Image (cartoon, rainbow, N blue to C red; front, top):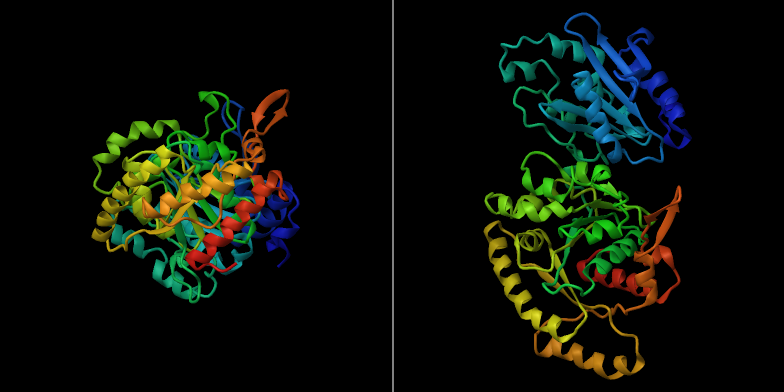
Length: 488
C-alpha cells in the first residue's frame, strides 16, 4: 500500500498528504468537511497541523493531529502536543513523523501515551486505532452516560483481550504503551512487545559504579554505549547522577539558561517519583553524540533535591527495576551511570542492574574505595534477594584514565592491577582505557550556531573512528558482550 511506505516520505508535507489525508483520515471515518488543516490558535502564536471534528454539535468532539518531518524525534514534540490539547480542551492527540504513530490521551493534568506502532504496521492495527480515535468511537465515548459505571463504560468499547487475539500476529514488533490509571477512562493498550519472544536474548542491564569520583564513569558509559550501538545493539543510557555529566556528554544539553531548559520537566527524577506515570518510553530521548542514535534518560541538577522525598517512598528502590521490565523487548543493553556516592540513586542502580562495571584510575584513593564498593554491593544484594533477584554479577574493575607512558605501563600499571586482584579481591577486565587527548577533545567539542558557541560532544568512535581510544572502546564492547552472553 503506497501511502504506508515510510521510506517514500521525504518531508512533513508528504507525510500529511500521503499518510494523513489520503489514508488515515478516510479510514477513521472522517470526510473532508470534518477536518481543517493549519488551524491558528488564539493569539496567533501557534498553529495546529490538523483539527478534526467527530461532531460539531454539543458536546463537540474534536481530535488534534500533529505531523513532523521524518527526520525529527517525536519525543521533542510531546510537550507541544500537551499544550495544544490543554488549550483546545481536547482529549486525544495524534503525533507522527511518518515512521511511527503515537496516540496520547489527556487525563487530568497529564498527557499519556496510550498507543504506539510503526507506520508500516498501521494497516494491521487499524481496528485498534479506530477504537481509540475513529469518528464513531469518539462519538460513542462522548455519548456515554456519566452515570454509567466503569465496567459499563468499558463494555461498550472493544476489549483489550479481544483486540490482542484478533491481531496477535500483527502486533509483533510493537513498542509498549502506557495504560492510563484513571478508572473512568477506557483505554486500549497494545502490549505485544512486553511478551517474551522465543529465542530472543533477555535485555541486559549494566551499572557503571564507583564511589570515588573522577575515575572515568561518564567516559566509560557514553563511549561503551556508542561502541555497542555500532555493533548493532539497541542501547539505552540512564543517567542517575544529578551532575548530569552523561546527559551533557550525549548531546542533550543545548540550552544556555533556565528559560530554555528542556530537561527539567521530564528526566530520571520523574521516572523514579511516579509509580504510574513517566514511563521510560516517554522520557527517553534520542542521543545526539553518535551514529546510530541511542536512547537516553537524562538527569537534571534538581535530582539532588528529590532524594529526601524518594527516601520516604516504599517503592523508590524498586521502581526503576519495574519500569525497565516494561521495555525489556525494546533494548538489548541498558547502561546506568551512577553518582560517586553511597546514596539512594546508587542503590537504585545496583538493584536494577544485572551486571556491574567498576571504572577506576587505579590510584590509591580509588583502590581504597573498593572496600566501600564491596560492602555496598553486599548490602544491595540483600535487598535484591527480597524481590527474588540474584546477586549482581561483577564484570570487573575497568582500568580507566591509564597513563600511556611506557615506563608506567611496564612497571607501575601491573603492580596496581595486582593490588586490585590480590589485595582487594576484584577481577579486572582485560581491556584498559588509556588517557588520551582524543577522549578529552571529543567531549569538549563545540560548534557555532548563529554566532553562538554550542556544546556538541561526540563519542570518540564518531570523533576519530580510527583512533586508539576508539579501538579500545570497541574491544571493551566486544569483551562485555562476550561476558554477558550477547553475541554480535
